[in-house]
Length: 299
Image 1 (cartoon, rainbow, N blue to C red):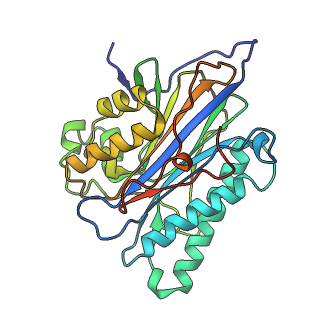
Image 2: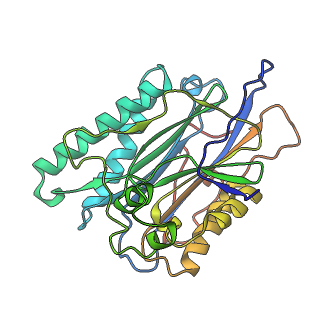
């Protein structure tokens, strides 16, 4: 069987639930052509016993658009707002994600309406949350979320783009889509309209030790194949995987900003499992790479 799939894996929840730990990292790079980075990445792995620990883990990538730094403003508003809303108070994950996306959309739209320099700005936003050994997704745009499980990679988000819609309708083949001239046109983004329909999972997918989640902007997926993402993220600790994936994009002359996050699920009670390095434990590797500090500490 091929190691790739667009279908979400099926799984059953065991009655003997073991605690799961998280090792994560996120990096962003301006790429080889752009003069500024309009992507924004952030994640939180709350320390055990902290106030936020019961609310779970959150990681997201936002890819802004608008030019003249407006895209950067939009992606930062999205990341900050979704994070703040998620950890504001404990409530069901779908509710927290939905409120975060709605608040971010309103904040970006209002800023664009009242600030001429930000007129027309918007951003994608793809977020994964983990709580009580389950995975949830919140998503708008064409940034992506993947799940790697047992050497297979599953795209668990759905692109809100013109080219993806044409492929779903059968108008274009997957091969034709790769060279379609309007492949970067997105149909849904935060901030463009007063309201937005975000794709929010209302039920969580049970997580398993060994699962690896990958979040990325299209700056990665436009130049790096899913098989490569699977192999690198599935074989390396999160920080090293992020470094290697960004380097692959740079080797392909990355025409866009490149952002990637890797979240690995591990058995929390296994002393032999060594957590992957996080950006908090690693110095900045170049001036061009944005190293995101995990909020709330890391395991």
